[in-house]
Structure formats: C-alpha cells, structure tokens
Amino acid sequence: MLDRQEVIKDLVSPNNSKIVMLVMDGIGDIPDKDGLTPLQRANTPNLDKVAKESDLGQTIPVLPGITPGSGPGHLGIFGYDPLKYQIGRGILEALGIDVEVGEKDVVARGNFATIDGEIIVDRRAGRPKSEESAKVVELLNEKIKQIDDVKITFYPGKEHRFVVKLTGENLGDKLEDADPQKEGKPIKYTKALDDSSLKTEKIVNKLLNEIREVLKEQPKMNFALLRGFSKYPDLPRFGEVFKLKAAAVAVYPMYRGLAKLVGMNVVSTGQTIEDEFKTVCELWDEYDFFYVHVKKTDSYGEDGNFENKVKVIEEVDKALPILLELNPDVLIVTGDHSTPCKMKAHSFHPVPLMIRAEFTRKGLSNAFNEFECARGSLGTIYAVDLMPLALAYSGRLEKYGA
View (cartoon, rainbow, N blue to C red):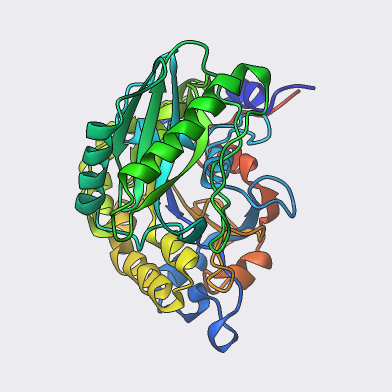
C-alpha cells in the first residue's frame, strides 16, 4: 500500500498561496450549560461570518472512539498518521523549551503534583505560576544531579510543567507513564515495556522517590508525575513533504516542540492571542504556511471551567479580524481534539473544522460550532486528510493519474 505522504509529495505543485491553520486546542465540546457547548454559547460574530463563506466538517484525530493525546492530535492535523508516527510527549515538551536531546538521552514531561500520603489529590499542583515552579525546578537541580551512572537534569516549563532529561548508556524509552492520569488514585511508578528499558525503569523509580523526599516540605508541589518518555524520533520534514515554508506561532512549549519536530520554523511571539495573530502579520511575506496555536480552550476544558472556555473563544473571535485582514488563500479553523468541560479531559468526540477558500460551497452553514460542523459539506474526515485538503484548496495539488 502506498504511503499517504509519498502520494501527496509527488502531487504538490508550489505556488504563491498562503495557508493559515488556526488551532484552538481542545475546542470540541458537548452540551452542558443550558444545553449548549462553549462554541454555541460564545458570542462569535467573526467566526460565524467566516462559517458562511466556508466548508464545514469535523475530524477524527486517530480512529473513531479513540481519545487522542495532544501529540497524536497535532500529528494528524499536520498530515502525519498518528498510528504510524507515535511520539512521546517528553520530546515535544523538551524541544519546545529548546532542550538539546542527544542519542544518549531520554526525556519526559513532568507535572508538579500534590499528594496526601500515597494519594494524588491534584495532578497540576493548583496550576502554579511559571516563576513559582521554576524555583522548585532549581531546587531539584541542586539536590538531584545523578542516579547511579545516569545524569539527571530538570528544565522549567509553563505553570506546573517541567522536563526531566536522563543522560547515560543503554537507556530505552519504552516505559509506562508514571502517572495514574486521575486524581484520587495512588502514586504510580513506571514499568518497562521491553528489556531495553529495564535500566530506565530502575532509574526513573529511584528518581521519583528522590523527588518526593526533596519536595516533602512544599505546600502544593510536593511530588511529580512523569510521562511521555522518549528519545529523539526520525520524522519526514514537513517542508519536504508538502513543499511549504512553515512558521509555528505558539506559546506553550509542547506545541512549539511538536512543530519543531516536524520541521516547522518556531518563531518568537507574545503571550496573548492578539500577540500571536500580530506575529503572523509581521512574518506574512516570509512564509507560505502558518500554524497558530491557542492553548487555553483546552486548559479550561480540562478544568471543567465552561465560562472561561467561552471567554477564550470570544477572545479569539475578537482578534480574528487581524488574520482576516491578511486575506489568506486558505484559512483553517479547527482543534487537535475535543476537551468537553463536562468530562474535564480529552475525549473521543469529533473535532469541529472550518475551511475558508475561494472554491468552497459557500452559504451552506450559518455558524461555527459542533452541530453546524457535523452537518457541513466536508462531512467527517480523518485529521490526517486535512493537509491534503489545505493543499487542494490552495491550488497546490496536481491531478492524480491520467
């Protein structure tokens, strides 16, 4: 069977068109307050106007019924089959904060957490400010430098997140997450999934105990959860496959890391949605493709905070004219997965999708929300088929076959 990317690569014909992919992380939801989703509740005149000029549909990130992590969710919309390319979250977080990862390194994403005895009571330690967690990372680096013959290094991330890097000989990365994924569960240690990772299992479990000892006096950040153990993977380059010069405009490290991993140029930007959109304007003449990431729709979904998720959607809508004034040849608005407030977690639900371009079936939809998208002209597609659609709408794909 032919590889999807190889087929697309042979058909791409570059031109001067511009593509913007706006990813509202975790945007998909289910009815909650008053029987509405956050997208339905939000006041979104700009998004709804775009919907009237667009083809709407919904994407399945991996397979029907499968709940994706952010890594697989993004790989899909970037045109990489998440079943073929399985990437550990650790490498994404590490690259996102410019951690150098060599062949002797295994990295993992860490969450500072709060424990009571053996029970995890808060997986995010109250979402501390980044500067507060950075001080705790500094303490860990001071107290824990090596376990057996393996060097240990900690790097601060956003809020409760950090990266830990293990450097040594014979370290595999096939490990279970040291994270029960739910609060109210007991501490979970890692377990090797193959023989090559047995040494790493031993080091990680010793490390968890040392972290617990060092942080025992901390009021909230008194433990850590580790997941996404990974070495540096080898992926086809986004620019080579799709023949696009791509810029990634994202604030959070993991998403910057994922974009860097596939070969996008990760650019500097400010912290707000408006800042990100203005960054696109500033770099408009330098790139063909812009990936623009909004994180807080997902964060508030995970917190079960319906009202704040609505507010973030409205912030996006208010700033959207900044992008619309650029008049991109193709504007895509979607998410990497759904994060229903009612579930406080990622879910298996399809993800809303909207594509505005010259050759769309305009006038079939009236608003951008889950139910309009479910009825839309694009139907339900796999996320991995989004990039071929983006190329087709931009006039960059030649005819297949005679």
